[in-house]
Length: 373
Length: 187
Image 1 (spheres, helix red, strand yellow):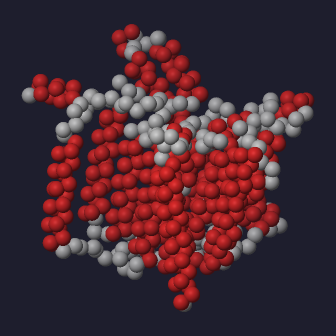
Image 2 (image 1 turned 180 degrees about the vertical axis):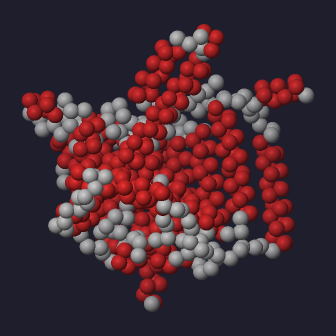
Image 3 (image 1 turned 45 degrees about the vertical axis):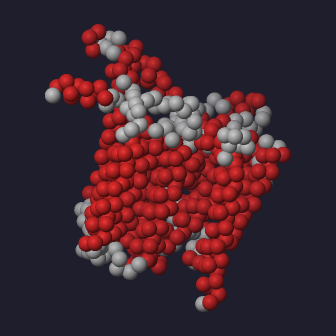
């Protein structure tokens, strides 16, 4: 009987140990099939817990962090009263949101209205499963990593369009259409920057891309491909900000113009799901930037043996999350520093500047691979 | 009766892949029927997405990973989004019920029956449909093997069709830009 197996190092470890533990069972119920099924189920549960832990666990931290960063940028203190420096405030807000009554306004298409928050979570969760968090910590170590990320991002646009239309509200529909146009446009640049990374790294597997950056800081793709890597990193930063609909590219929500955009009519848990998807997208996009440009889980070695010895003692997953939170901090600083462009400025920036620059970057990357790599 | 049932069980070896296939096929058929049966046209588009996701899973079960991704990219990320855009930009299309006239219904009925007959005629004569094993080498449909086949010059390669298609795509792209630009100048 065929039983699917999860091919990652943790999965191998479980597959190795389940038969050893199964020897303590009565002989009559021992069988290889049972062992492989049990090992598969244990692995599946571990994978689900890992993805949920990273995604749902990081959301409250990010909300607290965003409030604090925002407050300090604006010379305020932010939440201070509930718990030490307002740490419990986020938990209180999450609880409030979860216990709110869920209802749909009159005249909405209920099926689509409640489907949209479910669809919006597909992309961030699937991308999180592909990211190598450490040398042995990757849920799905597949060859199709980057094409899958590019493909799966379409679900985000879909959810926003469906949610905005089904709300039966002109602000929501306007926000949804704006954001649909924006995300479809910026998806092209996003995919092309990732293709640049694929080209210089020679693989679409995120684990293999990370492995090509082992060594010192200067082996990370941001520095390894001279100048090109840095340009590609900046372009990835811009396009991923637009992909996530974060300010300064948040014309989908634009509180001052659209009262919140596509999720104006949502409340309670469905709204929490849209909110959660935004913050998970922040984590996954930062992880993607770290994996593709900043060396993934490799320590930032500088080529001096004594310093590198200390730096490599820290486990890779710690370095990974340190880099991810640095990236998130950058996204937040950008959000609270820059002003929002107009819709037409945003579109002409993508089609007249970013896309031609991206094509040039691809050609330059091909020249780099042909001459140096 | 019992022997025929056991024969049937032997004819349909039920392992994980088979069970997955039947579940996915059932979901696909149900969502495909809902796509044409639902009154609201936007809900039809939503069920069409589910049907496409089912096709993707079928490709994955056949180990054709790149086809599965292309299915998501082209159909869900491209076609369905543009269908939804069209519905959203067309006023009141999504709000009213969508009906067809009776002669069209009969034509559709005849066409679908004809399609089923042709499919059965084509599929049933294939020998060893259930017992045949896959003959493609390991990783035949993987991204790397597929890319190498697409761009190789040898008798196995497809470099000329690939280039012809890319020129066609470039021509359509330039055509689309030209049409859009002319509209702007007239305004």
